[in-house]
Image (cartoon, rainbow, N blue to C red; front, side, top):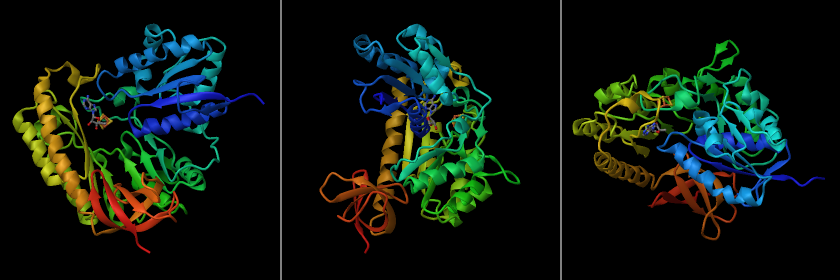
Length: 440
Ligand code: 5AD
Ligand code: SF4
């Protein structure tokens, strides 16, 4: 038997990239590759890149620079760039870093085996098309190997919203939903392999409208169908746009037993003036009305959000409106960013705010969020909740898992196995996690 070739994948950015990296590893598994945790002994290095942050392309070029020596020592080593930077930069990557053998955009992963074969034949391989065929279908030969209790499952990709700051509609393309039958099949496969908690992924996941029996399904319909999958215990979804929080989805948060009390619903700003300039198509009030409706059906729902500070033309008063919205909405988690320009997006052409103003606002916003995060975590003390255990903790006999609300929970217990979902009483809130005791 020939030795397996070793594949090192370095993943940047969002959860969809984590999912994509798994699919790429599976696709190359058919070419005799097994994954390795280090670049040093790899036969192929793949960077799965992200374009959402500033200077994304520059960071990829400097990372590639680090592999120069490896490639010099091992001429057979193949180096590939995948993900959103690959999509945005295309052939430019091979021009600036001639040692790169392969460039593949997010819509073309299913063509990896063929692209890899071309690199082995000494060619350069580039594919940044938006192909007609269904890449998920082509990747369907799913492995049977056991895996951990949590998984991501992409149900929708791309976005038609065109927020003025965002590259996603350009790098991931138009909104496309996968058919529900395929998603259910993939979910059952994951459950057979030990998965009990699935997070449905999409750049605009609640715009989901996959073609199924009797017409298109909404995300809520898909969630209800997944609720019937035996062995699956928990369902979440991310990331949503406020305008696609339909009545049936809000209702499901109150009635669907396996849908967890957690929602990531970015608002970006609390100022209507800025929301308009961001092309968000919603107001602070319409956003808060959704939160009210969600809390009415599920009072303990934990809210998470994304915020951008220092968007062009943002005044101190606009920023105060964002802080006001945060105080009203109350978040359990949040991700906050200084606005930074993305070439090709409308806001990149506008006058920019000074960096020190952005820094100051980010700091104040994060201080408020940290306070709220701590309050939400502290409020869990004394509660009895489900914890899905994932791995051993740092102390002997300790296991770590996630609560229904996605808090990390540490529990002592020699009989706890990874994959167990057990009732736990929360006894203490510590920095960034909770401590709990098994309820026997
Ligand atoms: N500048 C700063 N933050 C951004 N995000 C997206 N584009 C930009 C940008 N140009 C943030 C948004 C989005 C999250 C994934 O990244 O808050 O919700
Ligand atoms: Fe980007 Fe989200 Fe706006 Fe779509 S809805 S353009 S992914 S920020």
